[in-house]
Amino acid sequence: IPEALLRLLFGEQDSEAPGSTDAAHAERYRLLLQNALSAVSMDGRHLALAYAERFMLLEQPDDASASYRLVSVGSEAASPGESVTALYCLDIYTPSLRAGPQQRSGKVDGQSLCVAVGYSSGYVRMFSVYGHLLTAHQLHTQPLLRIRHRLPAQVAAGVLGTATTQAGLQSAPGDTEEVCLTFADGAVVSIDGQSLYLALRVCLSEVATGDSGEPAFQYKTWSFDMRTPQVYDVASYGPATSRDPLVLAAKASMTSSPQLSDATARFLVAPVAGEAAFGVFATNEEVAVSYSAVDLAGRVAAKVTGAMLSMARSYFWRSSPLSGGGADSSGSRADAARQGSPSRTEQGTVVPCVFAVRDSPRKVVDITLAPAQYGLAALTDSLGRVTIFDLASSEAVHMLKGLRGSRCAWLEAEKGVPAQQRMRVVVCAAKRGVVEVFGLDAMDSPLASLNIGPGWALVQCPTQPLGGSLLVGSGGSERRATHPRPASCILLSDRGQVARIAVDAS
Image (tube, rainbow, N blue to C red; front, side, top):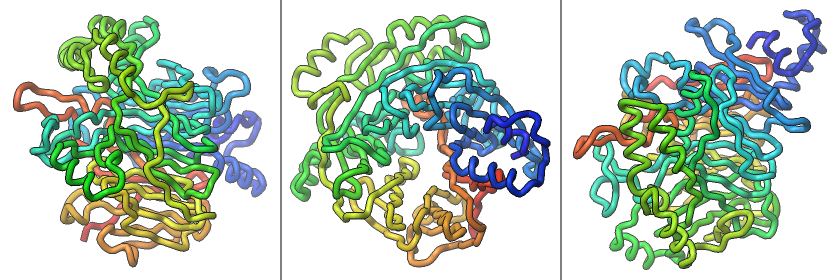
């Protein structure tokens, strides 16, 4: 990353000499970059950085050895006293970016990427790749800690009530694409991904034509039954993947918590206070949602055509995937809400704790979800342990120790490796200056280990674009709009260097 761009990010005066080699000057940038936020696009070519109230989007040229160049920068959307607290590169599905050789070429359309920026005021603002403000919403008043995009999990065909998708896999019933916003006081807002996708497509169209308007989307607000609500992290991982009544009956007879076996929503929660290192929270109730897409449906019809209009119609003029009713069934949704939904407060639906892992003083400080089809999460804690957690069975399946200050990411082999050995977990122990790659079938020793020196941080690349769960085709040929990319990650140093991680399949 050129020093001139770092000066722009940190708000340094233009009078500072570019290319300065002064040791104190370099050390200042190093310390500032340690406190900067970062996010990366699916293909790893776009890198977003944020510091204080400012963010910028950089692009790597076709020559991988060349320096990053500036695409856009923004700070004017922030109100006085606001600072950026969360950052996410949100790739947007377009029909021209279907999975295949064209998508894997790394070329990204100018309107296929948005930058989601969270602020200390609770605002989330979405910007186009060129820095145009697309939409802004204050869905909560506490600082926004983290932005996640989650695709529906897929389960084997043949389970009652599932929706068929590609490759013999099916989406779990009730599971939907979502963008989750985690706030400092433990509140979580889960935005329905498909309605947000269509809203952003309308916004991008309006930027191109000069029109303006406020998009609408569906969302739910959650809070958790804890004495002190502050959290380090929260991750939503959707409903139970099997909702077959016979399967549920068998599970209920083998577990003390039937609520977990037929859950409609599940969360991993890492609380700041208390004796619990982390907890699993779940509800088995159908939760009412805020549905404000009526006027959006008309705007979509007016702004998009062809394949996009077909997908919009299939979404807005069918049963709502979140509420089970049609687009005009607000009354029936209200009735359902009155008939036994979980308790609702100003913080949203309160989700009870199913169980908690108490191991004081250990506290989980970061949760990294693997792609949905793997059903795993990597939990890093304050005592230097990394726990691989199976989301389906709610069991810790592996644990690594002696990794204080570490962060995790997921890395997937593309070919040449059996499916059960394809997923790897990458651990960067920043204090030791070591990055290690572990295979899930052999966690006793790393597949690869490299001394890289201190000051490096892992950044996970998304695997699917927003809108990737949309179904295209008709009848028995319906399939998901995109195939997931293999999980990947990059390393970012506090000196502005960027490195990709790859493991030789042989």
